Length: 135
Image 1 (cartoon, rainbow, N blue to C red):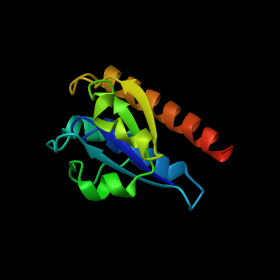
Image 2 (image 1 turned 90 degrees about the horizontal axis):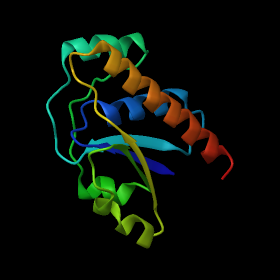
Image 3 (image 1 turned 180 degrees about the vertical axis):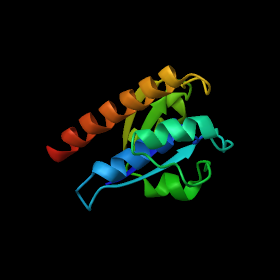
Image 4 (image 1 turned 30 degrees about the horizontal axis):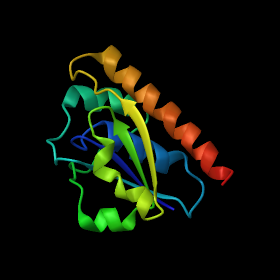
């Protein structure tokens, strides 16, 4: 199964979901990538430091959604609360899955918010992986 994590700019939330999923996933048949509705700019150094403390690396530059990624995916996970689910309404028509987590974006200068967002995404990823094991 190919999983595409999506947020608005692919600079923080979907990147965290992708990296953490790939880090803890032990099933070689599950692959994850991430993209944004819009290709954003890189995250701040402040956020990068906090993310690294959680054992997560954001190395690649933000990537926008492409036709190639949409064809590749079997499941879209909208990580963000600011991405309309209607953009992916055809997923179900084509037998593909759509999940929505509605994680709000963190203020770049708030360590507390950044940590809270990372914790929430990690919890969602762990729950998602557990469900996938039983399918």
